[in-house]
Image (cartoon, rainbow, N blue to C red; front, side, top):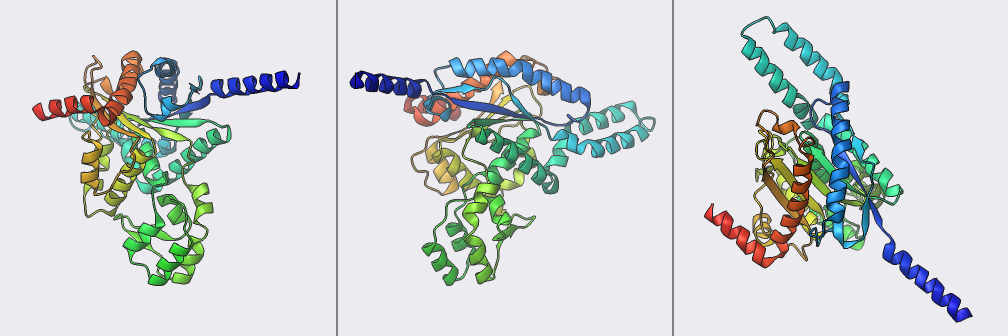
Length: 390
C-alpha cells in the first residue's frame, strides 16, 4: 500500500512539473503625446485589441525556438500592463500649444500646420530624451517590473515610438552587464584598490547602481568618473551587491520589442567611438547575446519615424565590431524594418494597433527570423547572400 501511495505522489509531482507554466506579463510603454485623455484612451483601446491577438500568435507559434519565449512552458497574462510616462510632460506640452496658438494668425497657414505636426510628433520624444526627465521614468518602470517579479512573473517590454527611448535606456542603465573589476582596470584606480577588488569579487552590476553606490558618476559627455579616494571607494564597493538588487533590473526580464522606433535618430552619438557610452553599448550587446535575451525592432516600412535600429550582424560580425568575445551566444539582436503595413506614410506611424494582424505576425516572424539568422547556418548563408546582392 505504501508503495502505491508513493507512486501516486511521484506521478502527481511529475504532472505538476510537466504542466507548470511561467507567466509572462507584457508591459506596453506609450509613445509621444499620450497626455490628453483622448490620446490615453486611444493607446488603451489599441493595446486592448492588439494584445489578445499577439498573445494567441506567440503561444501557438512553434517556430519561436531557442529563445526564452519557448524554452519553458509559459502563459502570457491575458491582461496587458500599460506603463504611462507621457502624462509627466503635460504641463510642458500645454505651454507649447499656447505658444503655437500665438502664431496661428501670424504667417502662412501651411507653416502653422507644419509646426503643429512637428510638435505633435517630436515634443515628447525630445522631452523624454533629456536625462533629468528620463531617470525618474526608469525608476518607475523598474518598480513596475519588480512588482511582476514578486508575483513570480517574467516580463517582456514593448516600446512604442518615443517609448523606445525608455526601453533602450532601461536596458542601458538597468541591465547587469557591468563588471566593476574591468571598470576599475580601465579607470586606472590604484593597485591597492585592484588587489582589494580581486580579494572581494562581486557580481556584475548596472550603471544605475554605480551611481547609487557612489562609486562613480557619469558626466554629460558620457565619461565615467570613479571616486579617487581609496578608502571611500572600498567601503562603497563592498555594498554593491545589495545596491545592485535595489537599483538594477531583476532577472525576470525576457527582453524588449521596439516598434515605430526613432531611437537611432536621437541617440546617434552613441556610435561615436570618442563617446564612452559607446563602449558600454558593446558590453550590452554581449550581455544580451550571452544571457538568452531578446532585443528586436519592428517597423512598418511606410512609417516615416520608424528607423532601423542597426544592421543585422552575425555573432562573428558582432565580435569583430565590438572587439569582444561572445561566449555561448543564445540571444537575439535583430531588426525588421521592412514590414508592409499597407497604410500610407501619413498614418503608418499610428497604425500598428489598427493593423494588429499584420503587426502581430511581424513580431512572431521577426523573433523567428532573428533566431534563424544567428543559429541556422543555411538560413544565415541565404540572408547574407541576399544582403550582399543588395
